[in-house]
Amino acid sequence: MTKLKTLAALLATSAALGNTAFAADTELNLYTARHYQTDEALYSNFTTRTGIRINRIEGKEEELLERIRNEGANSPADVFITVDAARLAAADQYGLFATVDSPTLKSAIPAHLRTDRWFAFSTRARVIVYNKLDVKADQVRNYEDLAKPDMKGKVCTRSGSHAYNMSLGSALIQHNGAAKTEEWARGLVANFARAPKGGDTDQIKAVGAGECGVALVNSYYLARMLKSTKPEDQKTVDRIGIVWPNQSSFGTHINISGGGMLKTAPHKEAAVKFLEYLASPEAQDYFANGNNEWPVVAGVKIANRGLDAMGKFKADTLPVGKLADTVIEAQKIYDRAGFR
Image 1 (tube, rainbow, N blue to C red):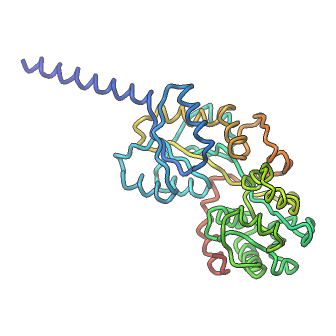
Image 2 (tube, rainbow, N blue to C red):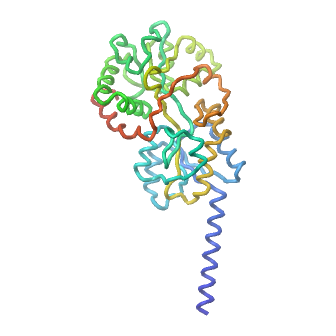
Image 3 (spheres, one colour):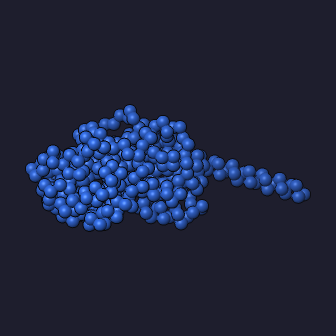
């Protein structure tokens, strides 16, 4: 009788495991800090292709990371996605990501745009826009030029505490050293046309309106405006010029949108499938044409007139995994310089 009970228990356990394996193939729990409408098509297409349903939780990066850490081993999250390499690296430093040994991801994504645990799936650049009537392109060929005396009262940017500017500062430390980066930050602050405020679209409009002579902005905001049919946006575009910074040195700073599989993921098979899907030509097309980001996979053809209008450029190839190494130092430098 005892043996029969043991056998029944084993059969029940086997059935439960079978159901769990089945669930792993039919659903995926995604925690994402990307809030773009066009991503809906990205997710629905994955479900159509694989039959795996995506259960999505959206929120701000800090909130989602705190939630995952609080949930611990019981977290239902399979994949975490966000923008900014330093944020992904921070999640990795918390020990949240699992190693993903995928030949598909390794062959598709360039080495400097991935680590063993998290991966970039699209890129965006930190570019300089200038008012054509106030500033000449040759005055602002490099990030370092924004701190020069002839830019006094002309520079606009969003907050120094924002991830986009923090990652730029982190990259400058690695290229130029901490001392020169602090000198740059102090010069930048001294040249502000106004206190940092608003988002990157606000900076573009301020340059077009002549409130600022020059600004640091993220490329996908600019591409969106270049594609806009609104008369006010077209007027702004006509008044501004675009510079790809540091083309004669380390290249224009890029940041990413990316993600990884969590160590506690209950649906690991589905998680790897999803990450591999994000590196597929079809998904890469969604990133480019849906949200004006550049694909990370070479050879993917895009048809985006906003990106095309900006032209080609030399991108910084600093490994994205290294940006977190100096991001805290960048924050301290910004604080001392008054870049808040």
